[in-house]
Length: 408
Image (cartoon, rainbow, N blue to C red):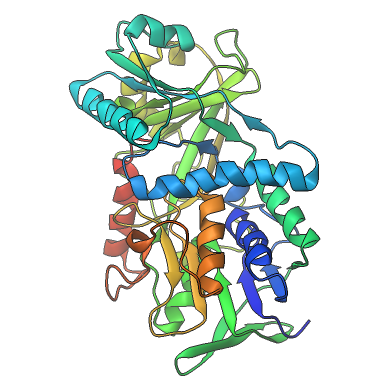
């Protein structure tokens, strides 16, 4: 195929969701997804913890997460098999007055949006997660309808549904550049030649600015390290326990096959220049702490206060990957200013899996010339004005947004 009506660059979870939603909005369009890797969702998507947290301080994100939950049900019907959504709930744990205020804010958000939530005393909170120290807990907020999911399987479900509706996927194709003529795009170039399309969606995650910035459309985000650890199996950890948010420790956790998956957000998160990223980031070293021991040592005192078993439950694996963060912690969704036909979906700020359905719905609506069913003005790509996404000072602002994050 040398021509497409809509070309989606990137076969991670956002690209797959966008492709499926495009087939629903534009059923007659020729939709093509290009992925550099030999398979879908092998990079940031497959490394995500994939908490699907509904209640969030930035309420603009919540409709996008709600769309993901709806999409999971729709995909199950289309594919005639349920997706592995673990509806274990989320427990927000407060161990300080500041965290209690944050918790009350989440409770108010739940009440406003009709989400179930229950305030728990320290003993009740610790009962839901026996590894919690009730002496360190001041209050808990249980949100029983939350869940988590295997991100690769969700991405694959989006892709299967998109294929059934006519979208095509090509693998092992590197996109070198986006072609433009004046104020509109023409297509892309690859080592195999040009591919023409009047509409292009960049959904390449950490690599997005390598395509957008040369066109003068630098995106206000940077690749930032995300990392989590997996413990050995232990009777303390059961599969039906909820995910846990620990804002006082800048940590989160969820069950993982008889063990515990827990993540920490460093005081000084690490970003990387996207021009330095290899096509396959497996084994990529962000700094001199590739196994995460320095980060774990930094976060251990705060985490140990709530999770005393940290001292004796062995850690069996460390996982590091990329999230794309913006300085204000909001997404990047929309058409690039001054360049018709070039749309972007990035800056997921650690919530790309949870909001993947909303990303797809929003981009498909915009490409079809329609208003999305929810407000996305906070996600405008141009909201910071002209920026240099490769500038170290700007990337540091993006990394700081991850360090400030305390929710799922």
